[in-house]
Image 1: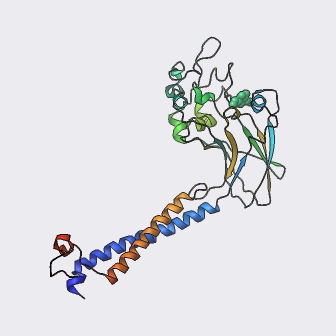
Image 2: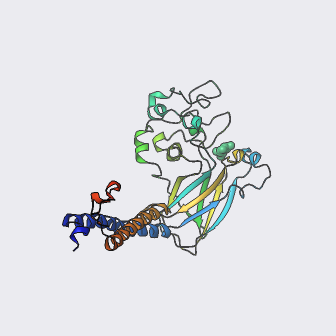
Image 3: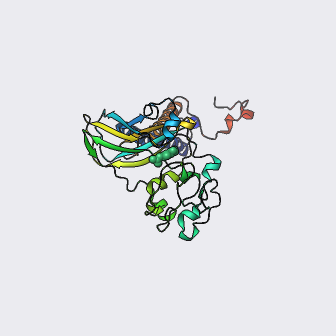
Length: 319
Ligand SMILES: *[C@@H]1O[C@H](CO)[C@@H](O)[C@H](O)[C@H]1NC(C)=O
């Protein structure tokens, strides 16, 4: 060993540690990344945008606001790969700003949770009190008022398929944010109808569609869980969906789509995690290799003061 150039034993250990650490990160991260990519690629995701084709009239807003028109719309979805249950059903809205400052504040969390707080309607304008007589609306505010109201019913090869709408909301929301003794009242009565109505006999803690809707999305394109199909779907099956196309996204140019998705251990279809792991692991392996090559062709002692610029003229300089 060149003792004056390669450095002491501790320096060899230091080099080995750096190279070993980078290699280890690479060796761990790359397979994790590849596994997540594979899992993500294996999930099947079908997206069917239907807002345009489900309205034949030229005056789309007029059509959707007319309570007498038939809003049923039949869609056929082909399944390219077998889908293993549970299959998640989402609705996807685009250009819908649930994060708008005035919208996102238009609710009263106290009222949602406590039975005695029905008349606590601060922040809820313009959906605070009913048009006739001014009784408090429960749940008040714009978020609840604009509850999504398209519905989907599915059949497979002409046989109806049940949609499980239980447990679509977070347990923490059901237990801690919405009261089990708070019931809707004066909701969506009179005035402009913003969306779905609520059954007044069911407490808010069990109105899962409402709970899902009220966990507001941070981005203008978002998906919300509608329900699940518990059975498997074969590749040759034909899914027929009858959509009740009620919700008015037409007046602000929003779009609507139905999404069916299987899940794997990383969740739905999402390549980001996999790509990130592979990239970081790859960079680490690359650096480790670089260090090995440098160490072999041009070893230098760690912390050698001879490399400092003001020592460079030193005739004893190793180079
Ligand atoms: C659905 O919501 C729209 C507003 O987006 C409303 O005009 C319509 O009356 C509602 N329809 C039903 C059936 O709830």
